[in-house]
Image (cartoon, rainbow, N blue to C red; front, side, top):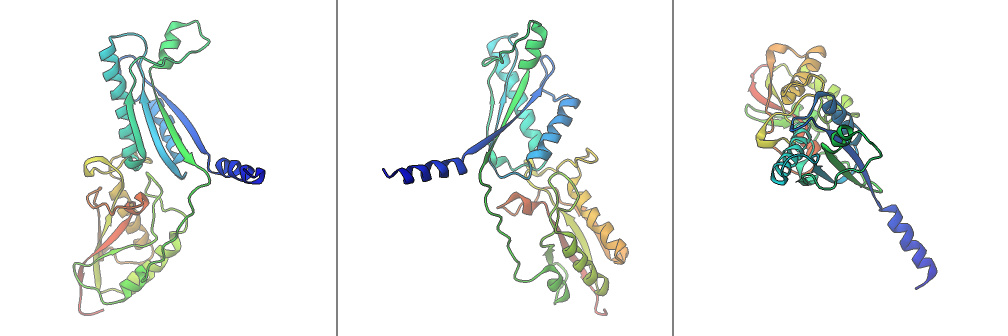
Length: 278
């Protein structure tokens, strides 16, 4: 084989090499509930990886050497499941979580430590392995055929649902992602002028189990879809939209769109009434 071709193949493999990022969550004896300190550490880790191009996430639970094999296998699985639930509650797409396995007391971590209690503490854990692909996938920006502002200016009627295009939220928060404010400002200007339109602001979340709402990382409450709707409501009031013309509700994860999970972190407007006189 041509030596230059070999060099090119090796360079290509290097470019697309997978990068693994790990995080460990530690548990108390015989417990699978995540301690508060460990929960906060995990949320910080989620904030670090949520913008990455992730291929897969593996979650493995472990126990120390005490207890029967069957007991430890169940406990380690419960620990792994508890971590998966936190990922789901914080709007991580479950389709990329490819492994959630309890390993029991096998594969104990070897450490240079004489204190048996410390050794056991280091093995009561869940190990999270995040596999990222390099280079990241190219970002494809979809330009809507008709912007939200144009739709609101047009002929709308009671019952219409209008997606606020390009209004995206940061994972786990009711804060808007970069680039959303200009679009929201344009929408606000139209709604100030269209005094004939009455509507309900509907907030949504992604990736939670059983259509549940996600947890707002700022308040620690399970009402993130409502918080997102209220964020838009408060912004519109600040910009001059009459609050008597609008309401806000949280829709939890009742109506996922499919596709990229970020589009489920959205807000829509449901037109409830259009008066004859503008």
